[in-house]
Image (cartoon, rainbow, N blue to C red; front, side, top):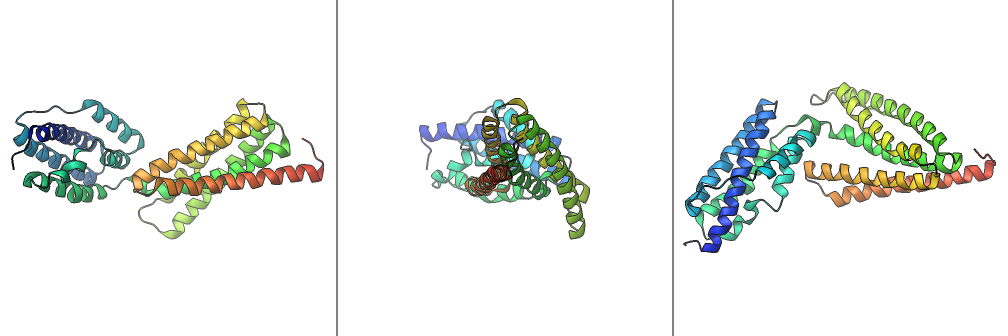
Amino acid sequence: MIPTQQDIAEFTRFQRNEITESILYERLASIEKDENNRKTLRLIAAEEKSHYAILKKYTGKEIGPDYKRIARFYFLARILGITFAIKLMESSEENAHNNYDKYAHIPDLQRLAHEEEVHEQKLISLINEERLEYMGSVVLGLNDALVEFTGALAGFTLALSDSKLIALTGSITGIAAALSMASSEYLSTKSEGDDKKHPVKAAVYTGIAYLITVVSLVTPFILISNVIVALGVMLTMALIIIALFNYYYSVARGESFRKRFTEMAVLSFSVAGISFLIGYALKTFTGIDA
């Protein structure tokens, strides 16, 4: 069947996407240290380039890449990892191959749809990125810090009633807890004998995730003197951290964002609410007024 003018216009967009992704995969391969990952990325790049050539048969013209899109996803790969950037790009509505199945009556595009759906995803799943191997350690540090620390700061808010004192107490508690969590992760990873994870690296990932969360949650009490307002800002910061992390995790791991976000948010805020009431109760019954 001969494509219509409307089909040709659509194929031009597809062609632009294919050459864009081909160049992007080549650039990602150039910054990847792992040899197997480099081979995987170059295989994907070669496949995208062959798709561009097939589409060119129908459009009859050369199409330039979208350099802004290349720059955007290259930047994301440098900051958040190659796997995250690739999976975000592949899930984007900008990808032409999401629409190839509309052209099942054209054999070439039917083949492209099949290759994009099966072969490319298989190649992407082969990418082995170190930071994802330690995702469990990051989850441990982040989750424990959010649940434990939001609760501790909420409890301190009414028990101490002084923002600077809350910040000081929270900082000491948070640093000690971060070191404790890092040590526990080191011993846990070492006892498990996991060849893919180094105990020291696992401990560092856990400790850093915990400390970043502590700094983010303590900062409102340093900058804001009104403890109730500071508490509200702290809880907002916790919600933002939960959202950002779970967005990254859901994209990189291909899991549901809503489910993970809801679970972590409900757990953290429930503990914070209970701790706030405990702080109020202790202050009332002990008669101690800081």
